[in-house]
Amino acid sequence: MESLYFRSNGSYLLGKNNFMKILISLFLVGLSFNLWGQNSTEYLENQIKLTKQDTQKVNYYNQLAALHSKDTPSKARKYAETALALAKQIKYNKGITKAYSNIGVTYRIQTQHTKALRFLMKAYHRYEEAQQLFSQPQLLSEIGLVYRQQNDLPHAQSYFQQSLEIAKKLEQNDQIALAYNNLGVIHFYKKNYYEAEKYHKNAIKIRNKLNDKAGLVISYNNIGIVYARQKEYDRALEFYNKSLEVNKEVNNQQMMAATCDNIGDVYLARGKYDKAFKSFQMSLATAKKIKATNRIIEAYMSLFELFNQQEKFKEALSYYQQYTRLKDSVFSSERSRKMAEIQADYINEKQEKEIQILAQQKKLDRQTIYITIALFVITVLSSLLLVSRQRFKMRKNREILHQQQEIYKTQQTLMQEKLKNEQLQNENLHKEVAHKNQQLTSHTLHMIKKNQLLEQIKEGLQTLAQSPKQLKKSLGNLNRLVEQGFNLDKEWEEFRQVFEQVHQDFFKQLKNQYPTLTPHELHVCALVKLNFSIKEMATILGIAPNSVAMARYRIRKKLQLETDDNLTEFMMQVA
Image 1 (spheres, rainbow, N blue to C red):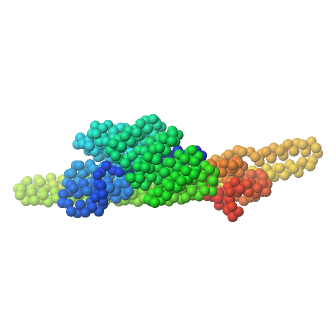
Image 2 (cartoon, rainbow, N blue to C red):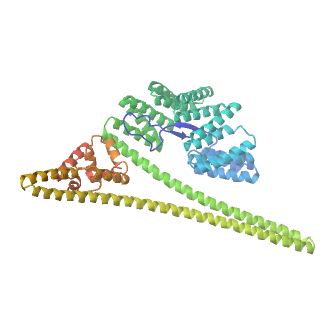
Image 3 (cartoon, helix red, strand yellow):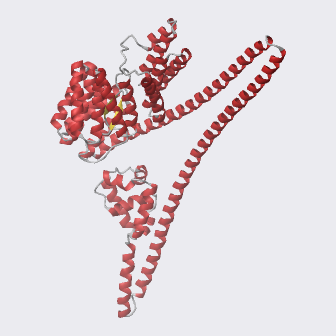
């Protein structure tokens, strides 16, 4: 398993000259199993049917698990669990350990970190007890990746370092290169760029000796990112192009899309927009060809940033909408998949408990038969004594069985309570949003009533202003104070705070996309989003309706809205 840099979905910094929006993520590449072409699913399943040796069947099931772990981890886990059950049945320790490792890998890929660590650590402790060093470097790298996914850099670095030391002792050059790469990623994330560069260069040196072209594609890309982060763009492009050149032989389409995207980022940082556009388009075309959704999302975001930096907001908005739609679709699918996995895990655990209970009952039945046979060949006195003891044992066993059933029922109850708590939390969240909306409405109504009162006072003062000169002068001063009261910002600041709680990032998003909007125009945008009429907005803002209409016209012009475009509908789509 190998670490590779690329953007994590949904984690972007919008704005100009921010091409290095790169977070470190974890990418699965070639397993160190030499399965070659013959080890297809069909071949291995046929071998399982043909072989009579259970140990070999365990090995085949483990190989199937490794083969499917990247693309279909749930299917891979079923193969590994089958291997584990059979290995335990025949007491095949090597197969048990390998099955634990494969199960842990599938959970890591699905980011179920607690379960991943539980099974991976089981495998690691078994390797330690058996003093089997050969498989430890790869397993330690897997454990390091779990901690890396949790952003626990110290633990991740510790396990990658252990992997490197054991691999050096065993002279496992492929694992040494892998450990160097992973440590380079850790130091990059810690902003130790000199150390990151050194580790990646070590990985490249070994992979060149091994003629490991698949590994070189990744290492060249990774060191290119290190140089790009330090704004050494020429060197970054040099290694990105090396990665693409080697990839012509490897044909890793995922990596090709990622590297093209990285090259586009370099050109974007240099202001070479045409070259950046070509690179991003190549990344998008490659991603679409292999239906790599994550890379398609990346390409849409890159194109959005390109046009946004050029202030071509129409094109930028188009790509951003495509990015948002696809990202939301992936998020929804991922959420449904995780819910299905949780339900499947619950069903599997329930079935395992039932199987355990049945197995214990069968064991008790067998014991009863053996004891009954023994009773026939023993004297009456001994038989009575044995019967008495047997009854005592059966009572104890029933108590144990009853306790286990109670534990099982308790677990079911706890799980149901957990689901109820989650539902309650969701209800509380909806109530909180409703409360915030009520606050926002109340605050707005308060502002309307305040301004209406001030308007009445102003009209009264204007009437009194027709009195003698001295009274007229005093009333004129009071009239000006009242007019100033219309423009107090305290109510607006309180309104803004409540509004932002309900519609998070509304003002920020508008300001980022349309920086020419004034604070007054942002106020008008907020009231438009709340669907207030022109007359109501005039009362709230303390200005004439004509002034509100003129402000709306200026806003439409800055937003580049067509005549048929509805301003209220546009604001509803923001944040």
